[in-house]
Image (tube, rainbow, N blue to C red):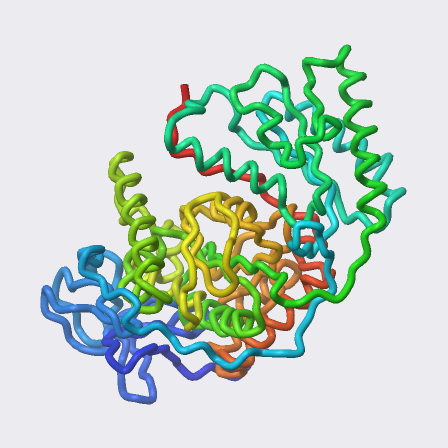
Length: 505
């Protein structure tokens, strides 16, 4: 076996730290071709000092200050989390707005996907029967009904991909009229009209809950409701759900894939189980693909408020106008107050796994996270749970939690999800396909049957950001046209998780 040359990755000329690229890390005494010698063992993805630091000196990665030295650090030493003092976040009232709005790149023409056209003008990438619920109380009954629908009915309708129950923990025991209750309510309403359901959603409620089943019935059709308290026993409930489900399965089964414009795609971007390679490989490649999608007319969502907060000064100059800039600041300010109410702050992110992967603090994580957004102008900002209104690059304000972010992006109308990971996660969604992109080849090899695209080839020099970006772009089109992702092949999906900042009662 040929020993690999010691490698580190320096992102920007101004950086005074770099990350160790070699699998398994490098040992004390390792000498790089440039002459740098390691003063101690350093794991893969963790930072090595490229210069001597005095206490208080700025530590720079991505060309930005990620913190200040807590103590003297020698060139060649491991720059650990404990060695870095977190800087103050950007002042939201001193940000440049729309000062560097990117010029639109030439349109990318000639690309379409094979999808489903909906009567409301939206487009589906999957053909699903959606059954939504107004309260958790009905989940047990619905679970049994869905099991029977999948076993007894679904095989009769081969053009329908699956049956999805939109179960959640909202609906009762909540302050339904609290101002912030609007977030979970509009989320559920928008989930119920997701484009992959083709307008054929069934609503199952109990009958005494605070969130009325009727409020989730977009069409207002009485036949779309099943209110369990109206029925004579359990068997009657199940048979009614199955009968109404079959009526919808028949109509859904008549739908056929047809050529659709890429403007019909709403692609959500997210990262989870991130590491120090996320901002070097997978996220920049996804950002390149995002620019291609925008050029082709698609809508691209990036999210996770706490993972853009410390890099917001790089985003506000990119907005199309001051209105969008102020909307972005407004959403971040709201989240700052939300964290303060919970006596939490931005240091609660990153996770232990992120830190093990080399991310020292939220500033470093945010700088890598926003790479997913590419370089296009930001055309709109969505409060949590709202549907997209404009084509192009959109910031959908969500928490950083994978499950809450995914749920809110689905509510926004996302019909393809792209998820980057460095540590690895089997995350999936039932309502839309999830494309998994690994930051490291080691993860892609270890999880060969869970990862769709290996962006780690960028770190090893066997592929460029542009090449992987085009690969992701084409994979998204294939997925939207019916190609099943690895998560879909295994039937992996996480539960919906509503964002409810309003009180429980």
